Length: 295
Image 1 (cartoon, rainbow, N blue to C red):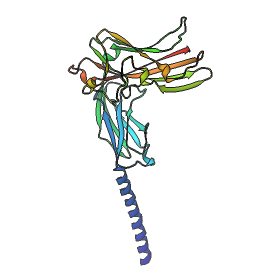
Image 2: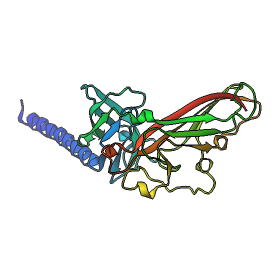
Image 3: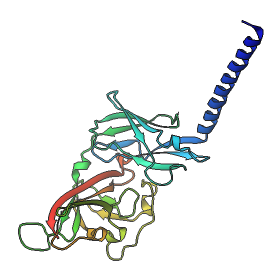
Image 4: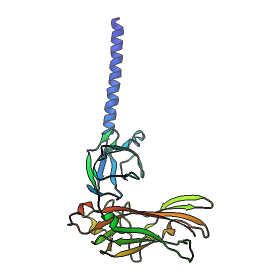
């Protein structure tokens, strides 16, 4: 090979290497500006409750669009199986830092130790572990919706709905009042003829009883901040009903037929902070029901 050609190839090769190193360093510096976060509300959950883990990212600069969908929630289950869920921004501007709740959805879970981590832009949080344990308390809290029947006859002619709460735990029950983040009441309305489908939230004002004031927002509730939040207290063996005016969330048309599903996640404390099982609280309990009626 002629010396001049060898020098030219050497220079070209050095340029390619330099470009590669520059791109690698640039990408590394870029992703270093973003840090994934993972937060656990508690380290012990009850089997059957609605489990929520908080994940997201802090950003020192705007996040490039190419990275918006790079989030992955990693879970190692007690039997060694894995869950790797893609996570994208659900609210707000994806170019900025964000945080949101993640859950297991319809997956069937089993008791045992779980290991979680969150990945974003190729960076990953340290592993966090939590336990899921069997607890009879889920079955001892009777929470269900009762659609009101405003007319006589066999069919439901609903104008409202009650949330019935009954305490069979043998201890005092404290349930967070409306306003807590993630405690929204939602409805899905399917109009039969003509067909239509809409899902929306029931306004907080329609969930408050007379004399109650709308609450400020907290992401999570625990034993530390629970005294700051208005609670519904149900004594052992007692019950209470909460009226929810779901028609405030949707414009129903007279004499039209609908199928309505209403749901909410309740945040529940049982007993007192010093009780042996206090680390499992609060429980997040999903309550939903469906009724078909003519308005």
